[in-house]
Length: 125
Image (cartoon, one colour):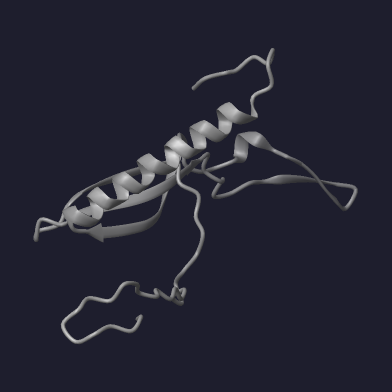
């Protein structure tokens, strides 16, 4: 902290960031969540992908591994949502997160607008 006189608040604070042993970067396609019994917000981020097969069978041709025999493939069907991380936060942190995300979205939108070349077409989601 910066120097301060007795009874005065500091004019600045230094925040140091360290990564926990569990820190990792994840990809998020969506979120699901609700409230904890204490009324805090709980959100889990997930990534979506097709499921990998549980079992595949491949032909053996002349002692070499050949093509997969698709009709013997076993596994889950549909789309897999792999839950990557869960976050618990109080409403004040959630509001701050919303404000931070809103500001980042504005910056990203402006960057996208600034980088467009006249005459290019755009595909919108």
